[in-house]
Amino acid sequence: VKNDNVGDYIRGKQDVGFEISAPTRSAAFYGALTGIAYFYMVAAWGGYVFVVNLVGAHAASLILLGRHSSKLHAAYSAFYLVGTALATRVPVVGTTPLRSLEQLG
Image (cartoon, rainbow, N blue to C red; front, side, top):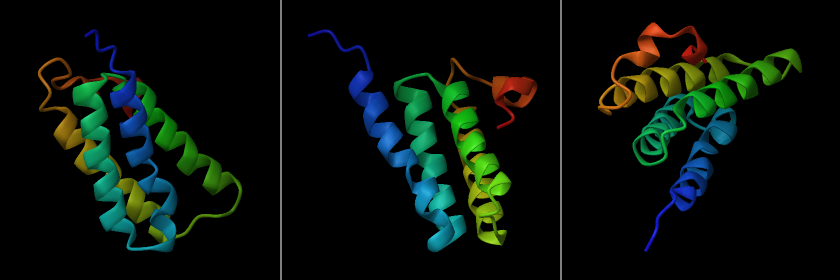
């Protein structure tokens, strides 16, 4: 059976939705969960640049719309730190997230 990883992408994309609910709950906890979901997408699907930039664009749009708070900062920081730390453990990715400007979220 051919597996084109689309199912893995969809599952990971649903998990990255934790970032959206983070500002109304324990922000750092849900940000860290989102980082773990991001790691899952990096390991299973490989679209790590797209995902980290999409979450960053979501956070930026909340700031532009005036819907930001310290919880958004805590959630995004936890997501980025946990997600990047875990993503660098995937052999194909390596230290690329730390060396490339396009992945700074």
